[in-house]
Amino acid sequence: MPVATLIREIRAIRSLNQKCMTHALCRRSQVPKHLGQIYLVPSTVNFYNADIYEGSSPVYTNGYFCLYDTKMPPHGTNGPHHMLEEVVDGKGTLCKDADEITGVADIIDTHISGDLYWIMNWSFAVGSGQQKELEGIHIRQNNHIEFPADMATLSQSRTVQRRYLP
Image (cartoon, rainbow, N blue to C red; front, side, top):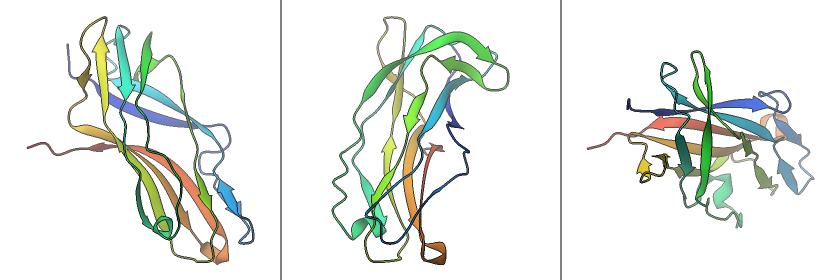
């Protein structure tokens, strides 16, 4: 079986580039929810018999998110996410269920930008086989806050990142 790579495509319920603008007096900001379509590539192979799993991760913070207790829990392991028989040309085998993605932040009296994120490993299993890690990649789910024109702007993203293995 060829080595599969996980691809996550964000399909916005609203516009993907839309960011939640929150007035500085508000206490909570939330990014509009997005759906993440999951594909396994290459698109020349059908991975319909595969299930994928999202791993756990502690919460990492920098800047703004280090200034208060976010009360954000670790990211829990979840899955299996079943792949369909549908292969999308140039994208790969489509996962049965989209992943809901959102982000939140408490608004505090500062204008320092920052990130709150998880770094998750993914794994897969074929049929009733043993679960194996997708080697060489992880997913970073990131909440980013910044303050252009004194307005809190919160955005959320998920990106596939290559890991450099020894």
